[in-house]
Structures are given as structure tokens and as C-alpha cells.
Length: 358
Image (cartoon, rainbow, N blue to C red; front, side):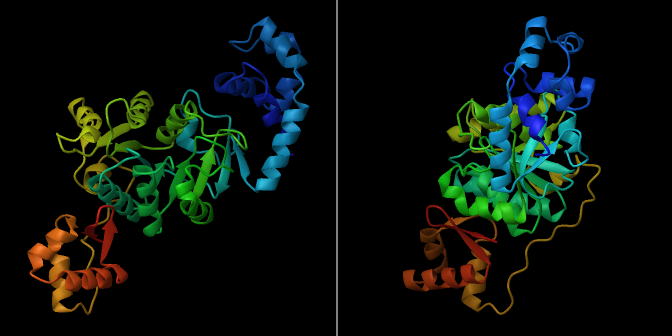
């Protein structure tokens, strides 16, 4: 019941994030604000007499009781804006959430980089997302994204594979798994990383929630990396929030003939920093201490034909047919070699029978 009155004040109609935080600044606690006289409430900028009287009369008990019970049953934590555990960078944005629902351990997340992009990303986009997220995580940079399919999921997985910190910001309640195809990722994030939301328990992933969520993704981060984005995509909304919040915007250039690259290429035209390697991001983070990144070493004990196939995949992902054509081996031989390399962790298989190193 520690945050009972936080839930109570949240339930008051027309008290949004900005007014909520002003009430905390004026009265110290939500309980004090709810018990204040209308005259005292009217001393807060933005509160009219009608709203002041509505706050004083509001019956919050049913909502606050229900939300408290659901939080306790879920086992999640509440981190409010008066807590030392509230993310410092997020505290700086104008419409910060008064409190966050948290699954996992929300540790110090600075420096962090947000990685966002298309839900229908290409193999090129997914490969680069995973690689850059892993390399940033290896430098101690937290990866922030939105737990959606495509680029978001690849960013979280890249950080997790590296053993790094990653934060999933949800457009629904922390007890709601969305999309369902990411349920294994959700379980891993709860165990090894952190999921956060400003939405109440059980909140559904409504379309209007995601633009609101995006300001938190950028607000937690020093910069936003856009991997692939069509014109008008939600990733561009996140980039716009980043600019408004004084964050850096990075973008990976894409194929000029690809619809999914138009948004990222336009960002670069408008001044976003073009990213070819993790060094392009690290040099904009003076608080990070860049380490020398070396290419991943090949596993020891490779047979000659395995080493030859691995060298083919060193520069770019290849379709299995291209591997067969370049290697002069039979289909069954190449399939067996690719399977062995994948089991050894030397390569990974991407959608569409593409294979990439690492």
C-alpha cells in the first residue's frame, strides 16, 4: 500500500503528468494534495476552481485499492519521481511520468542509447541492430527500446547476448505480454534486465499508447539510433521527441530503393549523425570510456572447409544459394557445415535462409 495515494491521484480526471508533478512539488506527497483545500489547490498553476473542487471531491478508493492489489499480485515495483531510483535523465523531461511500474531491476541507466526501427525490418536492419546493440552493451552502454517485433526485439536480444543492460519500455501494462511472439523475450527481460511502463496494470496495447511511450524511450537515453523507418513511422516520432529533449539522433543509412529506408535517410539529410560503426555513437558520449573493439575471433579447431565458409560470411550476410555457388561444395555439404558453424556460435541464421557471421 506504499503507493496507494499515487494511484489515487492518478485516478483524478484531468490531472495529467504535468499537473501531477506540480502537485507533488507544491504539497510534497499525493496524499497531502488529495487532502488539500480547494483554495490551496488553486495556488498550483493550471488548476481552476472547478478542477480544485473536483480533486477534493474525487472518490479514489475503488481504483487505488484495485491497483494496489494488482501490483502486489504481479510482484512489480513502483518507482516514483521522489525516489532516488527514478532515472535521472527521465526526470529532466517536461512531461515525465510521476511514477513507473517496474519489472526487474531498474539500476543506473546512464549512459543509455535508444535503438528503434521498423517492426518489419529487413535482414540488413536486423543484423546491424543486433551487432550494434551488442557492441554498445559491451562498452557498458544500456540499450533502451520498446519490446516490439523487428528492430526493438533485435536490440534487446543483442544486449542480452552480450550480458549487457537493456530496458524495455512498454505501451501497455507490465503484466501484459505484447506482442505474444515475444513472450520468451519478455520472460528473459524480467529475469535478466528490466521492463517498465507508465500505464496501469492490465492496460491494453492501444495504438494511442505508443507515441506516449516513445517519449520515455528517448527520455531515458543520451541519444536515439534509428535503424530502419519508413516515412511517418513511430520511430520518427521517437526521433522528434529526442530532438525536443535535447538528445542526439543517429541513423543507419539504408538502400535508397527500399521503402523502409526513406525515414532514416531523410533523418540523415536533416542532420542526424550517420552511423557506420559503434565508434560513431561512442564519440558523442563523452561520459563513456570507449574500449577497443576487435572483430570476434573465429572458434578454435575449425576444419578447413568450415574456415572457408566462415570467411565468405565475414563481410556480409549471404543466402545459402550464394554460399553454395561461392564454395563449389554440394548442397548437403554446405548445409552440414553451416549447421556445425551455427552450433559453434560462429554464425547465425537470419530470416530468408540468410547466414551471417557472429
